[in-house]
Length: 207
Image (cartoon, rainbow, N blue to C red; front, side, top):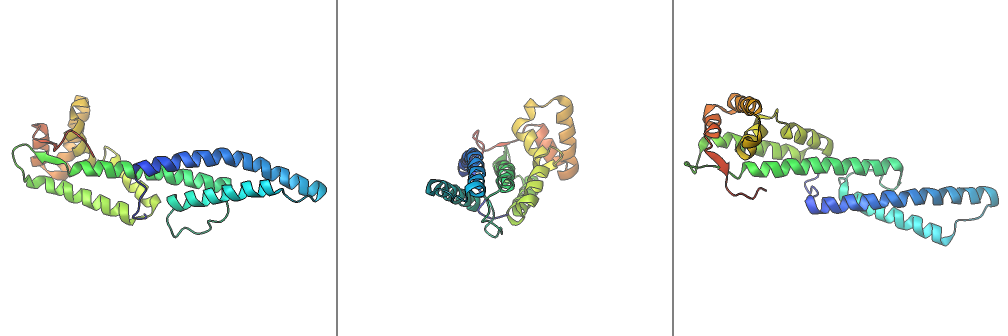
């Protein structure tokens, strides 16, 4: 994945721009049909206004495409319904990746209430760094899969973070299941610290 992953605010801007282009695209399709009909029936060339509208749409699409897709993506010069869908899929993937990155940031904010340097948590920090490395070095498709895997509660790392940040919201069965998963992956020191409420976020404001 491109290292310059779209961050939250620009991501929302891209979504709005894409929605606008999709609406304009419907009108463009009608313009193209009319242009084809006129050329077939009367050999009439497209009007300057129609050509200008097509050029403007192409320009806006290309600009958005360059913001969303990796810089080495080929075949950028043709706007089709499929290419608009490709941008939509890319934005959805970016949203999932950004959710994973925000979640990973929380791992760095966890601290022990009594031990400033709680060594067992280092394994979680290391795993978090490994997930970040995968997200930054993989294609968008691969990064999305990595992000989805991490965000799943089947991930012991996310399970540990869920217990620390929102364990009180879980049912007893879910809490026990996640704690067992954490204990199996990271050992009893971490699961015991979580169970005793010794691991908390450094601040109440989450990344």
